[in-house]
Length: 329
Image 1 (tube, helix red, strand yellow):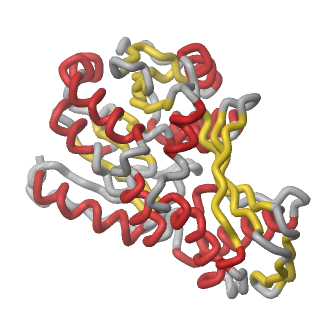
Image 2: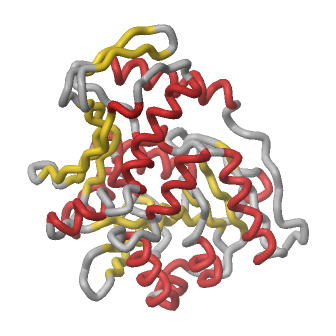
């Protein structure tokens, strides 16, 4: 393997392209009767930092539960995956779970993809130190679009890694599209290791998204700060409050920014208003059971092969194979 581990690729989308997409999504979302902004725009540098704080909160069980699953079942995962795969992590963030997987499966390379380029490169530094002989190719891109992977790793089979139940942030149709996009990015012979949060008691779920320290509230409100900073916004952030509610019919937690009073503001030169009690819908976190998780993966072009869960069955990690491939996981 190459001894120079960190290989810097040219960003696949320039910052001005991301800015244009951000502007378009925000303006479109605020123009709807029911205002909503895609959750992917939470993750500027500050948002990414706040999310890492959320993952260690006592109420937020998904991260530590998924980590325990990966650690406990490392041997089984390694046998199911096999050695020599390039790990492609979608939405890598701080890559805190990545060492568990890299230590486990003897990979041929690591490609973290994330929309927050600065945060992505910072998170790669400890991995470079830990794995000096592993080629590491950070790619700044929106993983919701097909990505061009580094040519140097084009011949090795690939393992997609999508931990954290991030798939739950999307409506089922969008989640299906994303899984198909991942299939296109990874190519033939690929596998996908994905985390999904399970349906459970409402009190446990709402506490995980409305912690006592208020970190999740700050994370949610940071989106308004980002709009003000990057899109010449004038949102009175102090007039907004964080709300997290369980939607039983759709099996999801919803996060909203709710107006404490009537407000008017501008974004990118356009005028908007919220009445007291009106909200901007900022995130969904869909929860699954085994049947609904399997249905989603199949619709997205992936056939589940193995499922691992914690003892309390709060979370599941699924290894799936691209449908249509002859390879057996």
